[in-house]
Image (cartoon, rainbow, N blue to C red):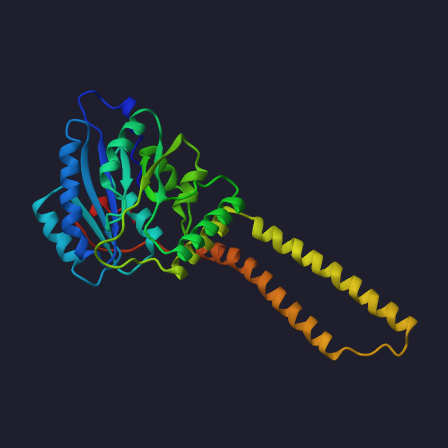
Length: 332
């Protein structure tokens, strides 16, 4: 793990500019790389005299020309550093593995589709210099369908209400974090990370900046309803024990209802011996009981699965290839 010491602006020597790592996870983003690189270079010119930049890519085993293009960029520009995983490890793990290979005093994460403007680094940087350890973007608007937008809002509301600590609403992974935050992140053993919740739960001085998210112009989004649901499930399970308590409450309530119902039928049979037998009612009650217990066991199983994954101790990701990184710099 990265054990680099914290270098917040106040502690940096006056003669050294802070290094900011721009971390970009990619998966089949060959169509966006040229435009992304041009904007990153213009950003570096804009920030000249304030900080130095490096561009750290993590390729989630793309099967298009993404790695070929990154290789070409790395040969001509030493600021471009990249790791390629041996398989697709998922978006959140890709981000965390990317963070671990950043050398910066602060790390800014953006997506390769340019829906989040890298030029906002100027605002993030000033807030970081003023003492904020985490600066994140708050999406005022995003180009997506009404149903998907409603699904996201309901999901964010649910995660926020169930989480043990507040998680910023309408904030994705477009953020800047201080080296101290990264050092704390790398000490957390989480096989299914949900970085928004992890960073929010660490504390530190945090603030958000509203911005308008642009539409994707090239390539295809990797997030569908299924992946959004999986991410939301990880958020709830990783940052709340409320589902377990709800399962216990529902189980106890069901047991009480069963006892009351059983007592009702016994009393009814005593008072009226010819009380009719309800075969359909019994079948419905049995099916309801089986379904309810399967649901509750599923909740418990999600928590047990995460314990099992921790005990299995699989690496966060396996690096297959690197660009402008030496063997000693691989942190996985």
